[in-house]
Image (cartoon, rainbow, N blue to C red; front, side, top):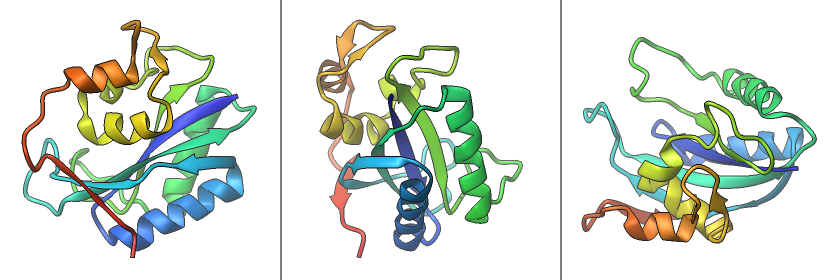
Length: 157
């Protein structure tokens, strides 16, 4: 089964995302990743901008098992979980879509509302139909309001 993840970092962004990709490839069959995008922080503005990308994995694991493994990866990378859920962090990995499972957390709400998730996800699976909205990701992206400078493509140097 395939699943799609969102990876984000605003502390040591390049090295953190490179290491996260390496660990994902170690623990899952990593099929491909999107380009990397830089966006302003959401929810707590006084922090560095984020780098985000999406990854497609193949795994026999359930959504719950994937989430547990992602939490272990974040912990292995030294993720500090503080009082501010939206504060600075070296890595954040979220399961955003699963090929066959839909539950209270899937699809992840950010698939519909966050440009930093939807744009890189559309690179990978633009014709995937959102199960709750019955629209393709491409159509959801077209409906998402944007402003100049909301997001820009970057590379991991």
